Length: 298
Ligand code: CA
Ligand code: CA
Image (cartoon, rainbow, N blue to C red):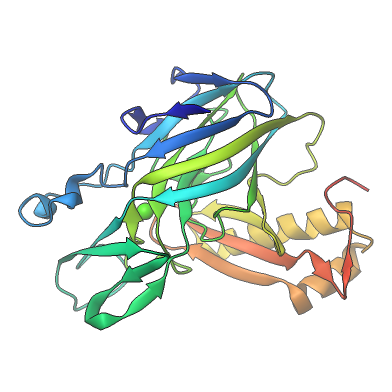
């Protein structure tokens, strides 16, 4: 299986970023990723006091046949984490007050994180940064946007499928910033940051401008996403994307889709700590025991 090593990183999504590997349409590739601190916090202590937030992304991968206007389907097949995670929290870093500075290093073993005070947290491995070259850029790997990027959506785990727009030949897919677990909001600025290996299958979809990218399909839900400096605008944008998706793809008309979203849609904050905040609108794939055929445009 083709593999991109964790030493091959960059710090901005950019159509000028030279690809480091080429994959065929439908091929499976492993992205080996270093943690968001570039490995600096593995030596907690003096080094950890340095203000480092590099967010390196492994890649980019050139996908054969991907042309601007296409959609890239990224099936997340597996996420295998390193055995330890890190977090750096403190004044001015997240949304909390009256906290000291602290670097945490916690073992990740057999699907569990050994946190403070004997607390064990079930791991839920996910990808923080995943995206393609933007139409215009470069865009820092710290930022989320229409190209993907620093999305920090906790549903981006194994078994999920992400749809990204293709803005440049080959799409130029990169990823990094793996999390052993993250809550909605990522409110103290970081998740449990770790390195690891992500296995994905990449497929080019033609003529699917109806997919509201960046779009995520999990085992149980559809998720539309939006990023904006204003949480108000971000939440409305994510919700309206899902409303359009439902009217385009489900049996519901505009009025019914709005009502259904009010009853069954979960408008969630994915993160409030990146340069642009992130929201998702989540809608169940199974409604009243039925699965609508919304994968294709009606
Ligand atoms: Ca992140
Ligand atoms: Ca992170």
